[in-house]
Amino acid sequence: MSASSGGAAGPTEAAAAKPAVSHTRAAWALALLLGLQPATTDVYLPALPMLTRELGAPLVQAQLTLSALILAFGIAQLFWGPVADRVGRRPVLLTGLSLYTLASLGGMLAGSIESLIVWRVVQGAAMAAAVVCARAMLRDLYEPNEGAKVMSIGLSGLGVVAISGPVIGGLASAAFGWRAALAVVAAFGVVTLAFVVWRLPETLARRNPRATQLAPLFTAWWRIARHPTFVAWTLLTSFTYGGLFTVLAGSSFVYIDVLGLSPRAYGLAMAAASVSYLAGTFACRRWVARFGMAGAVARGAWFTLAGGLSMLLLAAAGVQHVAALLLPQMLYAFGHGIHQPCGQTGAVGPFPQAAGAASALAGFVLAAVAFGVGLWLGRALDGTVWPFALSVGVWAVLTSTVAWTLVRRDARTADAAAA
Image 1 (cartoon, rainbow, N blue to C red):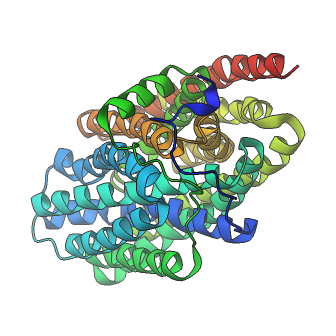
Image 2 (tube, one colour):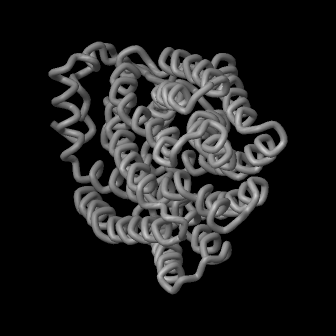
């Protein structure tokens, strides 16, 4: 079977023309759907130390409000992906976004850390529907190189969410308490749901009625997991997100509790890093057009490695200053803005008839990495910057290694096959 036929089974419906969705509308959809992830995580980061104190929670439980969400997010993709291949993207989006909004409201009203964790788990599972359909939708509409350009535009919109999220969360929590930050998250869910209802058509040209049958599904997952293109891009995306999740899970405690920033100042610091990420998505568009996806991530890896190693070396030298973390974090974020669009597009590229299943599997690997990072940080953070810097440094090395080896090798193999 060819790489492009990596579905659970051959679809029974006749091929249909791809729906007419403009680049602009597709980019807006990607920005909102993928933007749920930073909205869900970044907006409440300035409030995390506050809710930890008010709910009387130990640090490990506070970390679970993030890491349990990510684990549910990863596992649920394995469900939503095949379902989206069977029934279409739009029904899954409407169901997932409605559940996401309800879970956001439940978290806002939680009276204990345990109930907050439960609502965050539901929220993560619902968020998975939006993210897996966003990536699959991109494959429905575009070939990989064009899809990477549209993805980078959408992720520029996500960058705006990432920039504004911590600032809004810091202002809201400082003025009204930590529940206000979760109210902002619920409002974002409502806006995204409204966009899907009124502006986003179904993008799946032909449904696969066997997509959720277990035997063909596991066969498809096994085929996808062994594909060298999938392995290369999924590892790249997962490793770069490992460093980003270190920032998400640990930065509020390091910047606020260790370095003494206020929630408002912390939000501004995170916004500065998000500006760098946004710049990376703009560079991605230019470099993909000029050098291809593999060439783009090879160049982005230099920024990733410079950021991770400089943060690690400064921490090893005993430097505990905001600039010693923030400037390297900005370099890392720039590289992430290049790796993420290419990686998410590249992982599903060979599987046009099983984009949902491929997207789900890639998302599960990414979430498993993030969950491990969250568990480790919950035990490793010790009142210094060292565990935080160590984690970012390790993920920077792993990301750049994959960019310069597996991704480059896969690109050369594809070029040779096309010649």
